[in-house]
Structure formats: C-alpha cells, structure tokens
Image 1 (tube, rainbow, N blue to C red):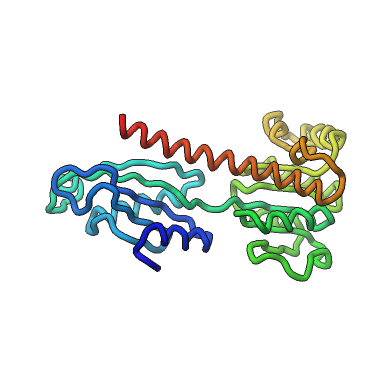
Image 2: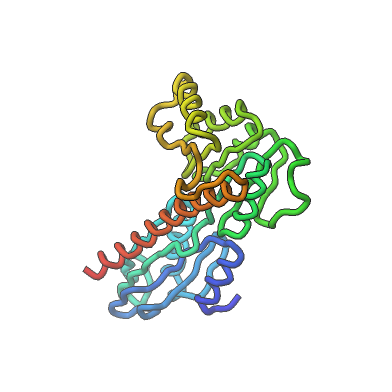
Length: 272
C-alpha cells in the first residue's frame, strides 16, 4: 500500500477497514515532523509517519485505543518530546486523532420474506454490513451480495451473536417470534435502532405485553413500529423496503454528522 495517506484512506475505505488519521497540528521547538504531517493507523498496521520513535509508538497506541471504542470521537494530545517521551529533539508536538473510517453500521435483519428480500436488495448498495437471519433456508435467494451474511438458524439463538450497537429490524413470518425477538432486544439494550414491521395496533398489543414482562417505558419509547419513514407511502414490498431503508440511512447519517461536529469542536477548541 502506498505511503500517500490519501491513497491509503481510499484503499482502507474500499476494504471496509476502520482506521484513525493522526495529524500533527502544532510543532514547537525541535520536532521530528512539521505541522500537517499525517499517519494512518489500523488495528494491525500503520502507514506514513509522524516522526518515528516513542512519539509514533504512543500515537499508534492511542489510535488503536480509539478503534476499540464504541463511539470514537476526535481527540488531541500534546507531547513534550523530551520530558514525556525521552526523545532527544526535545520540542513539543500536538497531534489530532480523527476516526475518519469507523466501523460500518451493522444491520441485523430477521426475516427472509417478501419485504426482507426487497430490503436486502437496497441494503446491498449501502455502506453497511448486514446479518440476514431466518431459520427457513429455502427462503433465501441462491446468491446475495458479499457483505450480506446469511444466517440459517433459529433467530433467537442467532440474536446473541449480533454485535452491540447494531440496527435491528424484525419482520419474521411469526408474530410470536417477532415478540420474543423484540423482548430480547429491548432487554439487551445495546442497539442503535430497533424496528418492528406491523401496524399501530400491533405496537399497542406488543407494548402492553412487553410492559407486563418488565420492559420499562423508556425502552418501549425507542421501539419503532410501524417501521419506516412516514412520508414514504405504499404497501408493496419494494415501497415498504424503501421506507425502512430511508429511516435507517437517516439514523446512521445523523450519527456520522455528530462525529463530524465533534471533530470541528476539537479544532475550534484548539484554535481558541
């Protein structure tokens, strides 16, 4: 891979590899690299350089700590090269760390019916990873996109393996199975989105039963049912799928915007 950081980031994005961009934003005195120098760090590799030695070691360590965080935001670190790191140049360097390629949104879709099939066709073209779960293996198409992971298993058993902070979409062929899945997802609590296909009547019935099983009002308020953007009307599978995909896109774009705002806030704070 090239030592050009722009090319490196483009390659990592194409390969869906999370990384952190480390940029020298201030240099005072004798320092190994000037402001603007960049390094890209992944979980197991690093590209380009901010000067080598203990400084680079510490920058790589911080970046990998960020990669392990659920919701990484930007951060700055000031390094006194002589006093803190024991480097002979003895100047002061400030480094900005930006999670410019964070882990892609993970969507867990339960149900391979008509709407599920239509939805997967849309999700296949989006920057996300998808686990598609149904116990009925004959319901899946013979071929799916490479980042759609087909899981032929009992959905309740498969639920435990879904990563934290996923987007859950429940639309199985069985209302009772839908209920059990929603109950477990809400009890688990580690999700960015929990959507259930169905009507407002289905929601009222489910919420009443879930409340009897100890699910609190805050958790019930997070349940999306009916699912999908209200502005997108229609009852055809493709129309429902578009509405659901639109809602998911709006959710993860909102989170991406928050991350961008955090980066801007870091830079403003540094400039001030």
